[in-house]
Length: 130
Image 1: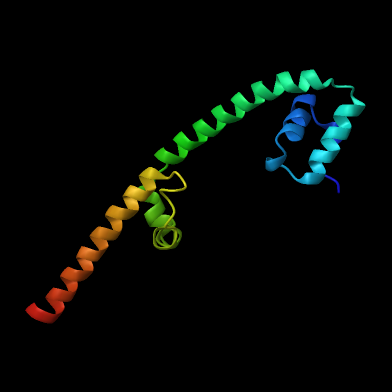
Image 2: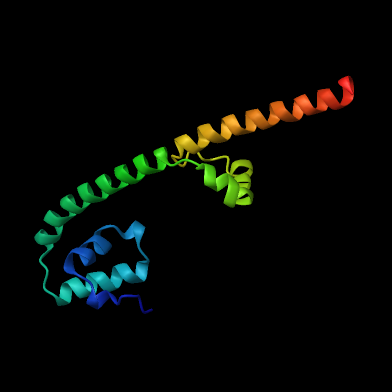
């Protein structure tokens, strides 16, 4: 299987990351990365030293991504230009909070509450007042 870019063209640090974090990569890519590291004569102790640095780097990258997801919100122009997308996301994506989209979850909760109150008010007006 050929990858883009090819495994042999990648930097040594990326090959180490592929070889030491196999859960994040295609198994064939992991095998090719290990073979390429052996061809480049990268010593095992070098890999072990790099793993701790890469682990901290990946943890920091995941923390930053989680903070970014937590602050992501629906904007006013999303409701105007992409209403069908926002509506589908609000009605169908019930795992927003689990996925880390805290602000979007809160916005969905308030929006659905307001829509429910409006529908109830229209129903009451239509059936009892009119």
